[in-house]
Image (cartoon, rainbow, N blue to C red):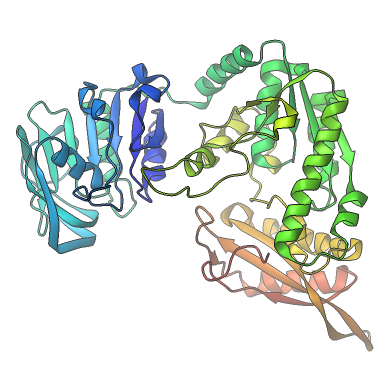
Amino acid sequence: MILILDFGSQYTQVIARKIRESHVYCEIFPGNKKLDEIENLSTVEAIILSGGPASVYEKDAPKPDSKVWQMNVPILGICYGMQLIAQQLGGKVQHSKNREYGLADIVIKSKSLLYAGLKNKMPVWMSHGDKLTKLPKGFKVVASSKNCPNATIVNDKGTIYGVQFHPEVHHSPFGKQILDNFLFKVCKVKQDWTMKNYIKDEIARIKKQVGKGKVLCALSGGVDSSVAAIMMHKAIGKQLVSVYVDHGLQKLGETERVRKIFGKKFGKNLIIVDAKKLFLNKLKGVTEPEQKRKIIGHTFIDVFEKEAKKVKNIDFLLQGTIYPDVIESAKIGKAVTIKSHHNVGGLPEKMKMKLVEPLKSLFKDEVRQLGRELNIPNEIIDRQPFPGPGLAIRTLGEITEEKLRIVKEADAIVDQEIRKAGLYEKIWQSFAIILPVKTVGVMGDQRTYEHVIVIRAVNSVDAMTADWVKLPYEILGKISSRIINEVKGANRVVYDISQKPPATIEWE
């Protein structure tokens, strides 16, 4: 394992992704995590100290456990991580008059395994306002830039490296090779992080944790819950019971899709609960978005708990928690919680079940890889993200059976045309929204007064920011024409060209 200590950099997850792309396993922990609290510490083959927004000379600047320096494994410090190495080992870091943000050229001053096979001069991405003014004893300079004479440093043993730039970002074109040189030339690690190995190891872990116990799964039909359920079924078979709550807020044909794909595999251990009327009654007259979300969340738990009681002797609850959920729910240094995720933090106490989380060490694209390895159909694996509250937050204003029908049919047309154009996998999300307003139209010489449908298509990497997709006019025209002609109750279609921020991806 490569241990990554996170000091608040926005790029820390990118470091992990780059390492895993090279088939090497790594984990991220808060920068000030006590090493004694880390499981499998004995398997750590190298440590990477991430960047971060703080200055190492500040009073409350986050620092690693002092035992890091006694681990006797190679260390790579990136930006803030390099400055930590210098400051902690006797060097000096100060505020720089000439800050360096953006592209800069570094020049290699002396031979180093870190730059093996690379040219003497290369562009890198800098992002720092502090500089290293005094090297720690036993260190030398390997590379420099115009404003940063100590762009790369290394100790005499060649085991501790510091780089002032960010090799993990795509703006550093040779950054991947630099990271690979650290992994394979400095650390000499093996490339054994594969999905086949993951499945083998995780199945053994699940069997050990669960034993002969029963596991309950809240199956949504989405990527994470589907892969988690199939993985668990592969490990324990009939000991898994899956509950799918049909609340009526899913996409058109979703319940039939779940029954078809999972019914064959799970048999009687797939329970489908028809709760459409219950959810509609609970949401009657409600227009405020947050109130909608809370009602849906609480009602779902109530329905799920009721079904759980019918299944005797349940010991564990399966959750599709993925690695970004775990990372973002942790505190980094003294920073506040970035995101308290609904999958992390346990269960209602009265449910008295332990958690099983077979995906909690995987990134989203790795979950998809795992799903393909498990032969889960592409229609599940390649799905675009879908919000937890479902179409409730795409049905603005009060939710009614009629408005749900309209938005489901419109959304299905968007889906069909985007797929037909070969764009589905290239777009982060594409969907329809129904507005709580009606407009006048003309159909067959008759006056109409019907709903407005909004089309939303965005591209994003992590949903934190998003840009609207420049869909070809012919595709927009075809979607509009089909919705107006085929969806009874809609007579106008508009396209949302807002970015996030200031808008959000969803409308509620």
